[in-house]
Length: 148
Image: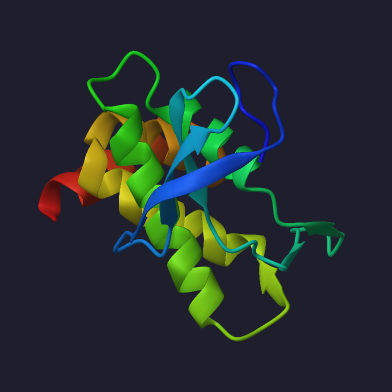
């Protein structure tokens, strides 16, 4: 691990903790400049995503984050809450015990998390994900949301 301050290659771990999301948090100290910094380690998901057109691509956490951030843009949703939601989604994906997963399953998990975080963000995501064709589709989804 390189020091982010002086780029030295030698650091020591001063503290290590596991979070409930399965992430390892390590507090490190540079042996050269003696500054401290924190690193996070998570298990990489080796999933391939099956798209609507049957194409397959490697799962990308950043793509999931970007979609959720876009849905939550200009909404009062803290970034750390989005990260926690992504961690929950990935924990569910990891528990599936498979190497391939349909994009629709990921989409449904994202909608479930967004519904809990912010209803406007949920509607934004759903309108793109469900490909609303007309105002009636949009209105129907809002009514469904209000009933729950």
